[in-house]
Image (tube, rainbow, N blue to C red; front, side, top):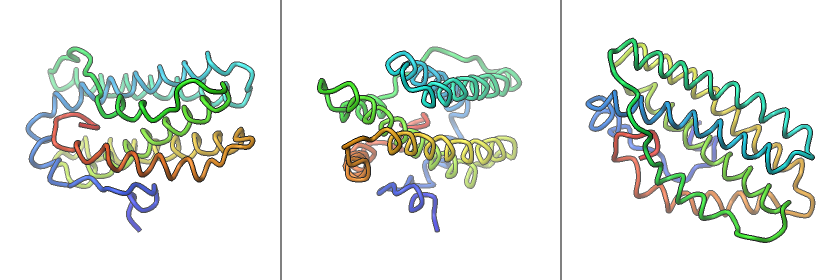
Length: 199
C-alpha cells in the first residue's frame, strides 16, 4: 500500500520532480526545508497560545516545537556541511492556499479543530514528499535523512488527527477531513514543479 493511500491524499507527487527539479537545486530545497521546519514550530506555538486551556494539546505542541526546531538545526547542519548558506525565507504558497480553507470567524472551538486538520494536512503532504525524495534522490545522505523524517511526519499527522477527534465535540471530524482532502487535491495540482518542499 502506498504512502499516498495510507495518508488518504488524492494526488501523488510525480517522482520526476526529484530528478527534474530537486537534484539540480539542492541548496534551494534545503533552505526551503529548513524554513518549513521553523514554520511548523511556529504553528505549534500558535496552537499553544490560542488554546492554553487544553493541557494535552499544549503538552503535545510543546514537544512538537522541540522536535521541529531540532529538525531545523539538522537541516541547517547539512547546509553548512555542504558549504551552502541558509538564505532568505521562502513564501510557502501551498500552505497559504491551504490556510484559506480554515473557516473564518465562528466559534473558537471550530477554529481550533480546523487548525488541527490544517496542520495534519501539511504533515501528510510533507510525509508524502519526503518519501518521494528518499526513494528517488541520488544522494545517499539525503535519502536516509528524508526516510527518517518521513516517519516523523507520519507521526505528526496522526497526532494532529487524534487531537482533532479528541476535542471534536459535535464536529464531524471525518467529514471535515474529507473536505480538506478534496480541497488539497485541487490545490496541489498546481505544485510539484518548483525547488521547494511543497512547490
